[in-house]
Length: 339
Image (cartoon, rainbow, N blue to C red; front, side, top):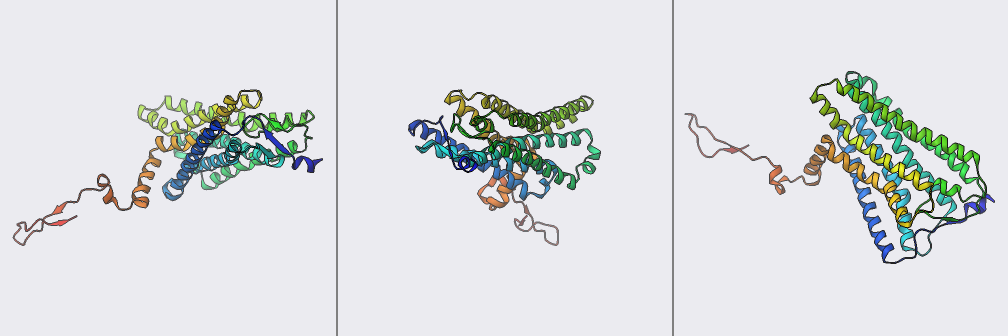
């Protein structure tokens, strides 16, 4: 039975036959996919190349970009393939792998955002103790936990799902998710439902509460601080807060999406893009625009590594001055030497 299940094919019924609409959707998906890959890799390279960005906040941001790539690569290539091919299918094993990696993307992103909120809390509420609290060893431990806990829990969830007998092979969605695969089963699994609730509580509700508590603490500290300190705290927290709200919205829509398999094709596409493509696309842009250090580093890399000959950019090159050559009697002799 298990060998049959692993080699069976699951079909996606939401795509429709290849045609102008599908080709247009393919082009748009490819464009968003390319921009997402480019922005995340660019952000990772900026953080990697600039040594003074090797700080806890930017290390966590680097991992958020890595996680965005995981989510994008786990789903988008198969979506584009299904848009232009007659057969819109995937093996049952491939479907489970897609569930695993897309779930790793969602859960790890939320845990990373919770860790980043803790980092901002320590930075603003305990600035004098920041370096003694956020030590390199502690940062490494937090990064390891960010991946280890969700991956371990998700691996067990996929194991439970893979043991369920399959009676149906049609999914009315753009890609596989765990609930859709569970619904293909002939039986109702109490263990799968209970474990799913534990997963949501551990990887979504708990990180959400931690982020909210961190910002409540930050807000209470800011209310007692000067206007200048409040502005500095806002500028520090704004990119993370925008990212957190953006991803929380995507998670909320995803939960609604997962529990309503009869939604229209248009809603399917919208929620899929909102969940998979939109967060990893806008997160690097948000941090690139809102974070002064990253903007400065991007400018520096463009000037020194991409376009080292600044003569092509006169406004980036300081004007050369002439120092007059003085004779022994103190009078100027000629126009002088450039400096």
